[in-house]
Length: 165
Image (cartoon, rainbow, N blue to C red; front, side, top):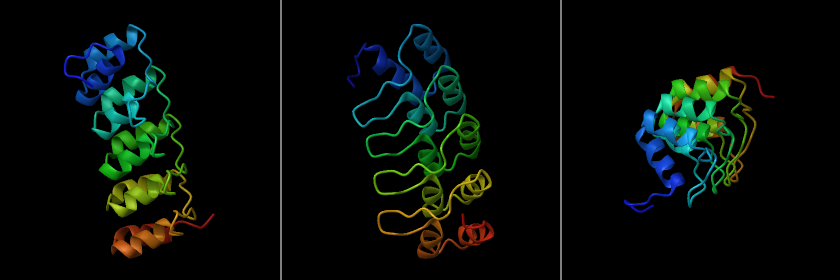
């Protein structure tokens, strides 16, 4: 995106990245597609949530943003939030129907991201929401395997508390 771009979609991405609620609202009201994608397949909602903008994420969801769109690598907003560790946004995405068990191109899930990056509050959140603990990535590893591999004892113990489906 050029700094001087005036394409409405580029402006929407910029507003989502900054969490600029008034401008986001204006662009949404003008009819810009809230599910448009950039060159990596990100949507404005994926960007807003990844950057920690709770209110911008909520505004985009209310405007019809698809909570389960996957970027071109297969990652979802929930995966990004689990990577970054934003429980409030995670709860919002789950309340809007985020699929806990979508897998990206490497087989990773939101639970695996939370486990790998030590976001144990997110591990607990997605486990309580019903994340499948038996899914395996392309290497054949489950979230429990990843917790052990990373030395993440807290996540390991949390994962052991939840029954295998």
